[in-house]
Length: 119
Image (cartoon, rainbow, N blue to C red; front, side, top):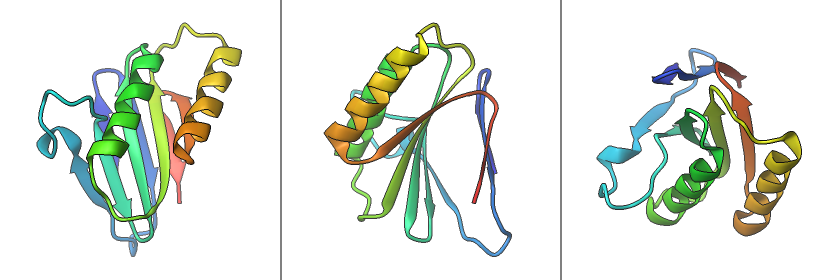
């Protein structure tokens, strides 16, 4: 499954027997609420995905807002920011990932586009 916006791309590689539901979040929440681009629902797992140009800090806020406002049953959740250019140093990104994990209890992956994720 390929998710793509502008120059950012997330590719999910999964067995053909695995059911994956794609949710375009802007079709689920009011436009006035910060939101990520997609949520992928798999058996017992949910991926929250924000496809971004370079504003990774804003992407973190979009993911946290989506987590708070989009009610999805208690899956194992993993959060992704896929960017095509991030001007932040690696230490700043690591601090953001650590802070996100402490605030939400979930892992955040920040990856350069295109990103392939295999199940």
